[in-house]
Length: 583
Ligand code: SAT
Ligand code: MN
Image 1 (cartoon, rainbow, N blue to C red):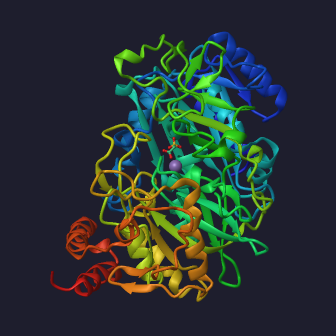
Image 2: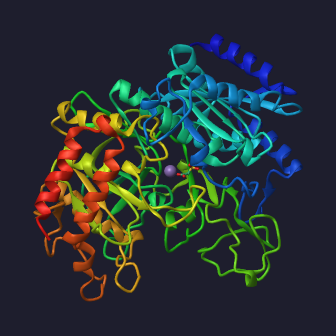
Image 3: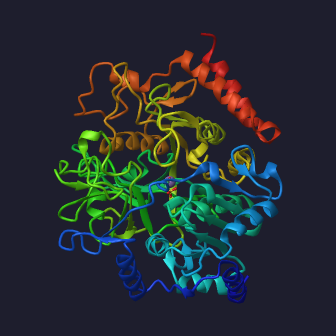
């Protein structure tokens, strides 16, 4: 693949989609200005209050197009078994035929934008290039924040043999004519009929996770749905943690954590909030880069209390999608610092009537903002070699069963804990919210190949390094008998990170349980938290009866992977069951 191949692919696509004109994006400020001016004219963007929100815009999606559509997302590998039971599969020839029929003349009267983009720091051996062709200027604008458009990408396309090809059209935004298709063997993505983030910004989930996960397996690295943060104790060295949580479970909040009262001398440095590419270096140290250049985060619930760093990141050079609008032309959302103004236009553009009981902002409303604007952005955030990882953390949203934190006994047990992760569903994906589903490594919607092979790949790292980081599991969302959260969460989560660091430094003893090491009494710093009596015990409780049921559920889930399931994982389920004993 070279620039010439790129040009012939663009010509071929143009023949299919018949655009009025073709624009090669260079990522310049001038280009952005022109695009924004056009979008303001068409109503694709609304300008926000220039005084309080300079260079900020509101975009309203079609109400039928506000989240990822997992049921319409396909992995089109040659063999169905390679996609695995964790993915929808379609035969590549059939998939191309189906989606090409939708693409036919779909850009008639529209501009076809060609976006060469780079995922990862410029100059990083781990960075990868892609090219997205789209008819959506909103996508161009978002991609210009989320990736590096232009020369840096072209240089890689010219010099290396690889780039990912992504073809996208919003079509008519008709849910009945919508598909997000991935062709791992061709390193190609085709997405039709949606303008929403994860479906349309192809560098993000489609490239950096679904295709990259498969490439990573072939090449011996990992592409993960993880935030990356640095944690610096008073006068101490910064250590880095990579943590996987499902969409809308607080990755951005954790990545931008502001140390609370009692931790004023600690610092948290943000490297990434959504995706990590992890490589072993020559010494066997796991290192992570964030392939993204911006944050595409959930807006509702973001406030100076929940995420002050995020509030300080937003408010300039920000695209808001599906938030409400005040009469001062300022964005507003549920959970905002300011109480709801009396006059408000809702995310659909209608005057908001609170008596009807609806929400003013969509629960999956998003912001797109450059990472460099974040006050806690790490000075290592663009480091070509990435940051060394001292601990891996898996986490889900569970009202019960799973304790606040535990450490797995070894790498293999850690892979088991990741593979058996479960979480209650959120508004980030279309469908019902609040159902418990298995979401291994928070990659259920994003692993581009058979989970059985993916876990085997994870397990294989144990034989490649004797210096792997310890693996932990956390759950901020456990509830008490009264249905209320037991843990305050947000900034206070640093207390759990402190224990994790102490464990990985060999400075905390922990106490053994059937499911892993728990903090020993007194090891978790709870000073000043004033948790109600019994709360700590409830947070850390491992109820044997519920865990036996949990292990049965895990075994049932694992069984759908048949002989692709690594034996180490089924054995581990069995040994934990035995340790739980008879209850
Ligand atoms: O998939 S998105 O990139 O739109 C956000 C998410 O669900 O994590
Ligand atoms: Mn995500």
